[in-house]
Each structure stands twice: as C-alpha cells, then as structure tokens.
Image (cartoon, rainbow, N blue to C red; front, side, top):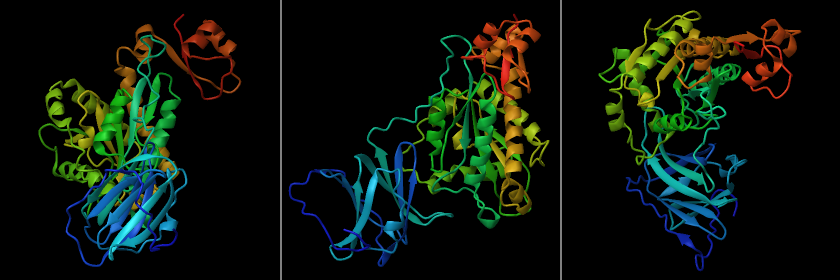
Length: 445
C-alpha cells in the first residue's frame, strides 16, 4: 500500500499479534489532524513523533511474520506526507497509512528488523503542541556502553574521564535565537571542540553523552555519565531570557537549599522542562532523587563542583562578559549525580542578538571550548583523582612536552636524558612515529 490514505488492510487470520495494545484515555477532538511526522535516530532506538492538532487516543499493536508496527489514532485525518519521512539507517523500511472504522487513522510501519516499541502522548507546552511519540528500541540494543574505562593496563594510572553533555537535541531544539539559530546546534559545536581538545591531552578521556542530533532524557544523561565512570559531568548550554538585553556567560552547580538567585531558579525551571519538549514518558521516574538528597551530604562532590566551576568561569571571563562573577546554584535535574562533580555551563545568551551572532561562528565556539577545556584541565592538574595517570605524574614530577617541527623521539629522549623505550612506555606509543602538536609525558628517569 502506498499513498496517504489507501484503504488497504491485511487479513488478521493466522497473524501472530503480540499483546502490546495500549489505549490512552485522552479527550478526543472532532476533526483531529496529524499535521507532521518527524523522525530522529539515536544510538539505541528510533523516535517517530506525530504532531497532533489536539489530544488523541491511540492503540499500538506489534505484528510478526512479517514484522510490522501498527498505530491506530482515533478520529484522525493525516495531513502529513509520510513519504517525506527519512528512513535511511533506521529499522523502518516503509510507512503507510489508511482509514479504518470510518474516521480512525491507521499507520503501519513495515520493519526491516524486529524492534521493541513504546508509545506515549505529550501535552502541548510553550514550545510544542500535542504529540504522539513512538519509540522503536533496537532488538539488539545495549545501553550506550562507553568505551572509556577507569583502568589503564590494570595499573593506578587511568585516564580522567570527562562526560561532555551537549544540551537538548533532536525533538528539543533548546533556546531559539535570531535567524533560526538553535541552541542544540551551537552547544554540539562547542562540545565537539571540547572533546577534541581533551583527546589531545595525555591522561584525559572525553565521553560524549549525546553524540548526534537526538534527545536524551535528563536522568539518562546522568546514567550515561555513571556508565562512563566519569570524574566530571559538564553540561553545555546557551542561555535565553525574555529580554534580548540579558547577556553574559555563567556556570551553575547543584543547590540543595534553593536557588542562589531568582534568575538561577528561572533557568533551572526552564532547563528541567526539557523532558517535556524532548519527550520523556511519565514512566521515567527520578528514582535517584531520594538517594541524591542523602548522598549529597557527602559535601566533597558539591565542593568539587563549585571549585571546578570557578575555574571554568574564570577562563570564560577572559573571552566574554560574565552574567555573574561566581558559580551560581539551583536545582538542575541534570546535575543530580551524588558521586560525580557536575556543572552546567551557559555559553552566552542566544536571545541576545550580539551574543547570538558570536555563538553562531566557529571562531567563537572554538574560543569558548578552549576556555571550558582550560578550566577543566587546570583543576584536575591540581586535584587529580588518586588512581589516575595525572596523579602519578604529579607525585613523581613528570613533565609534559609538546612536539615541535623537526623533533624526533630519539632527540627528545636525549634532550631530557631518558630512554626512547621509557618515552614509548609512558605514552603508550607502538612505534617511534610522532606528530607536530602531540603531547608527550616525560618520565623523571
């Protein structure tokens, strides 16, 4: 069946029907329309969003032999073009539609591979209208298991793991600036640059919480950082306010006792509402909250967040005006990790035309990334976790050398009175090949 409303339906006799029928008790409006259908691909699932003109009831059915997903939406007309939905690199082979029982819309997804479907509705909010969300989880999905490990050849010289969280994404564009500038795109650009800088640093390992244009729930962002065994969680954003005059960069940490300012409270409320825009099922409970409120009594985590945040803020202040000259605190949901120092960085006001113009440019994104990176690195060089390579270097007085044009490994070894083999061992080099700009750790002997 092709087209938008071709009345074709298969015989149900002999078809295995997996009991996934899900009825949603929502008010049904007359003349309900599906205005648009949008798709986002994440590492472990595919999300399809139906934009609705009003709340609707729906039923979800999974069929096998062949694999299909059926969505019935009550009293609804399709106004979107299904053949315009991009299906490349997804488990969906084709999307087709038809009419059943007079006024109901049936959407059928012909699958390339089996998936585990889940659907839920989202009420209209300030940024989006009513939506029906269909998540198709890959049958072979694994939790986005980070490749980073808190061990380096089973020794006490592991890398310091930095979880970089580019805010918003996918269905949730974040704040919107002049000329269609989207926060999710700006912060991804900055986050990738921070990652690239950390990759060049010996003893550091970056991990991207969101690696593409898709939405990750606030709790899952924390969970992914825990899976990565991160030593720091840094969430990168671009601010927005009702007045275009508001400007400046800022850094936030978690507050246990209320916000440090009215604006901090406003911002936390706006950022915490991201799940309403990005689309998170009501079944996703914040089951860490009680544990967090207890475990945060271990004040060293918060102290580290504030100290590290101050380093980042000071470096940002060298390239931009600061909105506040100290780290502020509020109840940001994404920062509620009990055992990982966590900060939220606002890289400027995307609602301010001047700052939006800067944030749009690769040059300024690079400057901002370097400021964030410098703050993170300087903190950990002074306060490295005890079992890390940086801590070992600090204890043993190791030095760092940046390779310049014309350098060879043997000449560097001779210059610092060390052996080539020790240089290779300390820097995990498989050969004597080196490159300009590469950083080497020089052993003490």
